[in-house]
Image (cartoon, rainbow over all chains, first blue to last red; front, side):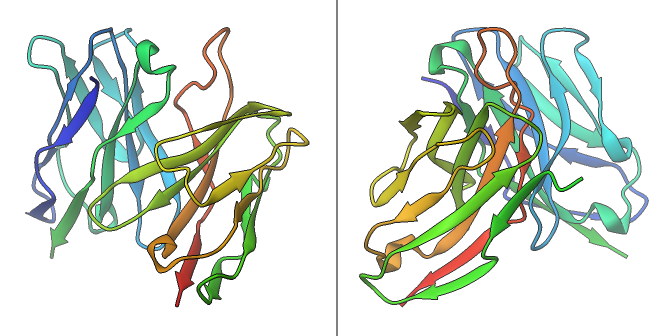
Amino acid sequence: AQSVTQLDSHVSVSEGTPVLLRCNYSSSYSPSLFWYVQHPNKGLQLLLKYTSAATLVKGINGFEAEFKKSETSFHLTKPSAHMSDAAEYFCVVSVKDSNYQLIWGAGTKLIIKP
Amino acid sequence: NAGVTQTPKFQVLKTGQSMTLQCAQDMNHEYMSWYRQDPGMGLRLIHYSVGAGITDQGEVPNGYNVSRSTTEDFPLRLLSAAPSQTSVYFCASSGTSGMIPNTGELFFGEGSRLTVL
């Protein structure tokens, strides 16, 4: 069965320091992977996607993620956190054998300390 | 450029009442879906549609009904509200890619916060 695990429910970093949000997936097929962001009391927005092209994917607002098949991971990173990055982040997988329905992680809340 | 529009933004219901959450998109997307979001549980798919006249159940369909008479609109009906349906509801749409019904690039509405007393 396909699944997505976000390894941390909360991550707290200081402004200006690197961000790492961890995501592992399980899938029988080559997946498409996504990160979405949800700012407080807002809808969700696509941050970046991996669809079997380059393994390092760049997204909006300086975020990037690297697909590592051997580790079944798709961690999200940013070199320097900004106060406006405070939000909840969701890792999502789409696989052929689930009729391309999206499987969502539980989310990681990113807290930025001034 | 409206994107995905949901109404109402807030609603309070009593147990047993029925209501409809409205969702409209102006991007000519074939794929539309409804999710509910509860703390610590991510998003759970309620129902989805891959085109006008075609709907299917998601992960948590019980107590909800949908129809898709036009490409633009995808209303979600709560038949007899229960406190367990207190949640934030999101409508989302996506384009298609060949035989793939949704590209995974979802466009979300701003959500409808429902409280059932």
